[in-house]
Image 1 (tube, rainbow over the protein chains, first blue to last red):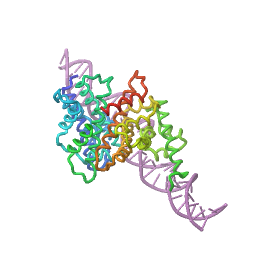
Image 2 (cartoon, chains in turn yellow, blue, brown, green):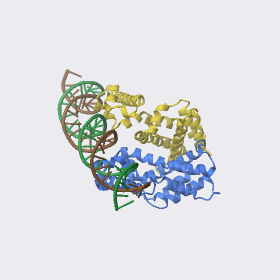
Image 3 (cartoon, rainbow over the protein chains, first blue to last red):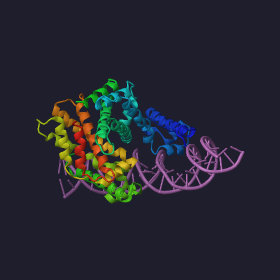
Image 4 (tube, rainbow over the protein chains, first blue to last red):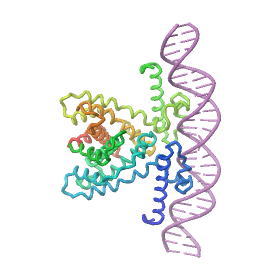
Length: 189
Length: 189
DNA sequence: CACATTATTGCGTGACACGCAAATATGTAT
DNA sequence: ATACATATTTGCGTGTCACGCAATAATGTG
């Protein structure tokens, strides 16, 4: 029952293979033209197995994005203790994102297809819990009683959403990191 | 083709009847035990008509909550022009919510059922656009270029989410308006 | 190597979303 | 009021899907 056992790793691998296949196929053919059967085949498992991992195409397509939360929290914990809270949070976010450009077509699709938007937002909101916990640790707050960590985390995740929105505007060429930095700066004023 | 015509009003009425029926049935019987057929019957239309209005049970159940956005924006526009931006936004939110308690069981359900959460978040995020526009008008910003209105609106909607989260905690008895006020105050500090 | 645990698979079932075309209701101009 | 145009509702058929269940295969353990 260990986490690093062959079993657990294989499960993660199939989950990832399924999700990658789902996203790739949706981008290639359009969301409407992807059968569950195709996703399963592309990942080398039976359709029934696909449904053991995900209970909807939407969930499969958005699953990978939903798993970056812990690294963000870790980036915050790595900030020096003396740094003011908001600066630390914002710098941690900037560091985490770095200057990697996300896949524009993928995010575009997730935000324009109504059936994917909800799943996408679930992923964004999921970033907040670990981030809020790291914030609570830093300011010595009880995350169960104090609103501040969660409100700040929610504001940060909101800034990410807004930056994404502007980054996707037709004709926009600015790198995501620049827009994210600008959005996060608005939280300081 | 008018907005106030009999046609348009009847359409809105059926839409609302369907959504109310869907929510009521889901609360009474649990989400799993609600057939599309039941919702349509409770609203007095055919199942096929139900599907002309909504393309999933989840959409029908969460539809009513998604339509409060314009009134929030109006509340902001009613604030005196001299008031500092954030105070105006926060006061407007407080005024809008007043001391009405939302339906705890309903929101509880929407946040605990994975298939509803995405739709619920879509509704919360939908609050941001009109609010951001009202903010942009107030500070004379171009909502297409300036990040500030949207970041602030997103922070407010995040605060609403966080307040909701705490309001739902088992054992919590504080009114929603108090928690919302506390969450919004964190945005000022 | 034997045994317990866990994952995968096939099959069957109930439900659902939606295209299409007919029927019905509504708005409008004469 | 009547006739006509437009929008909405409805029934039916179709392809798809999620999931319970039980059998099978794969993996970890003593």
